[in-house]
View 1 (cartoon, rainbow, N blue to C red):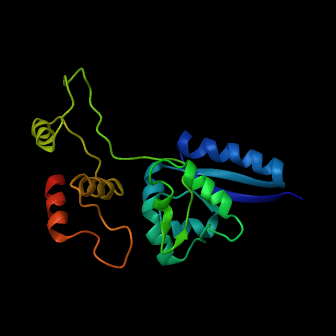
View 2 (view 1 turned 120 degrees about the vertical axis):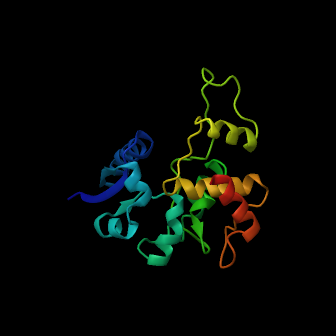
View 3 (view 1 turned 90 degrees about the vertical axis):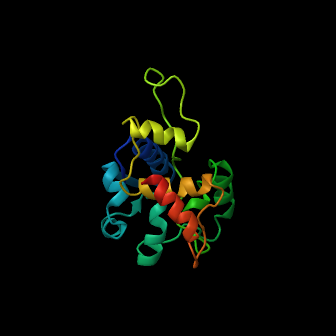
Length: 192
C-alpha cells in the first residue's frame, strides 16, 4: 500500500514544477507519494498557514511567514537530528541569505526552493538609462513612470530593502527593536 501525502505550493512553475519532480524521485526512492495542489501567488503571500496546516502534510511557505508559524506552532521545524550533513549541504548551495531567512529562534522552519529580491526593472525604450539614485526614482514617480508593489508582503520587503540600502538593516533576531525610529521613519517617508 502506497502512503500518499498532500502538499500545497503556489501556482507558478518555480513553485510547482520542482515539487512535482522531487516527489517523483521521492516516490521511486521511498514508495511515498506526494500529491501537490497550487494556490494563487496572492494566497501564497496572505492565506493563513495555520489553516493550510490542518489540510496538508507539506506546505511551501514564504520566509515572512516564519514568525507567524512559530507563534502559532502550526508547523514543525525541519532541523531534525541525524540530518545535519544534508542541512549543511542545502545551506551551502543556497543563494545569498535564502537558507537563514527560514531560521528563527534557533530552529530551521523551511528550506529555500526559490530566491526573490527587490530589484529595479526599467524599459530602455521609455528611459535611456535606469535611475541611479532615489531622487531620480522620485522624479520619475512624479511623472507617473514608477510602479512599486505595496501589497503584503512586498511592502514589508521594500521597507527591509531600503533600510539595508541605507546601511541600517532591520534586526533579524528578537526580542528587541526591529529598526530604530529614525531609520524607520525615513524609510516610511521614502516609500510614501
